Length: 455
Ligand code: NAI
Ligand code: CS2
Image (cartoon, rainbow, N blue to C red; front, side, top):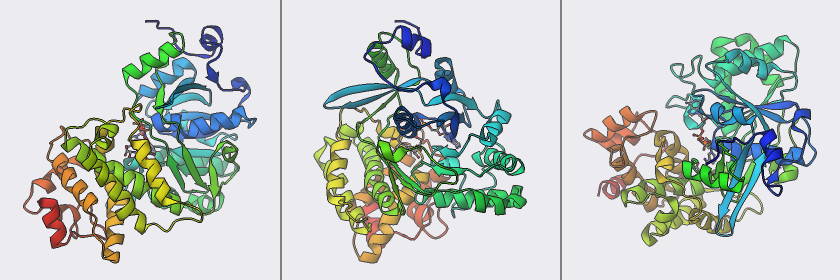
């Protein structure tokens, strides 16, 4: 096996001439985006759109990635001068593209000044985020948790970068959340305001006037890359190694609130949708796709399955996913004009059943405390108003509680210890969903719900 790494030289010298790749002079492109959380999803989604936009003629939208925690992605990408591949997998085969949009990756704990300088650079116009739901440092009530929002948080770097922009009389930034949160832009704006109120109140008025936090709905299934995946990509590249390779599906969707502080890439020219109101798309996606995903994860794991497509091949579990989407989530969504939620459900079932993706259920099962409120609890509360039951979600809750008891191994959740105490206590459902519970919301299980969940 070769250890020759993908980089601009090896791409030009050794890669197959017909390998699909970016179509612009990277050295002539300035950086316009600083992206926090340069994980698999950003590389398969926003960076892909940006690469296509620059290949279609857009200028100066190069991306500087920032990892707030580990150096892993920096070690994967910087020796490759930011180059990496996206491989789309489906029943129709695979397609690999070499992406040039990312210039470099900074590791914030080791180079904090460089991160602040990148945010304060005159050419920077957007800061974007895929830092997972837990990266927003929220307390139970959705406010900023000061115990979490310390010097290692995204807010620390944003506040310093925005302060420097203000003092240099530079324009503000668009802060674009691309995480699976309801009203992600509104939440980010609120949390940033709270952080500035504590740390730099004099900057608040400028932040409100010069920066925007548009919401966006993001959708592309991107499983964590495995060593086998990287070996397959190397075969495609005549043995060039891409340590930052990402695997995904052909489908991709990005619906963005059209509210930018200082311009944006022509993402609309390469498939993204710019709209006034993201909410219908985001609610459908979080409650139908992600709601079914989380049920598949916990119920599928309880039945011994490893991958999403395996759980979907189980007729009982598939019908639960179908019921959750069509009978439980769909009736709670105010669709946008022309948005066909029934065919959306059809498409989701097909996407989930894609055996080429190898999407691990345990990856979806992580961080349930951060995901379940917007994926299940809002649907349960809305159906309570409609006098309707949600048996598939209740089955998901029962399976999640088994997960929290360690049935699938160690629980990967920022609140794992509180959750395990809750499910080990006298009244787990009250400790989880009751008034003052860990996931207290607009929904409290009725006696009938309790019987269904507890069996
Ligand atoms: P990943 O594990 O490849 O990357 C996660 C990124 O978040 C890493 O850069 C990590 O350093 C950062 N991060 C994790 N915990 C953090 C914290 N507490 N504070 C700050 N940064 C933190 O995961 P991936 O696949 O890139 O997904 C990231 C997010 O993207 C998801 O949580 C979700 O919100 C969104 N997303 C993912 C999709 C997927 O299919 N993978 C699809 C749609 C949205
Ligand atoms: C998944 C999502 O890991 C999870 O929680 O439900 O990452 C899902 O793959 C994406 O939202 C699809 O767009």
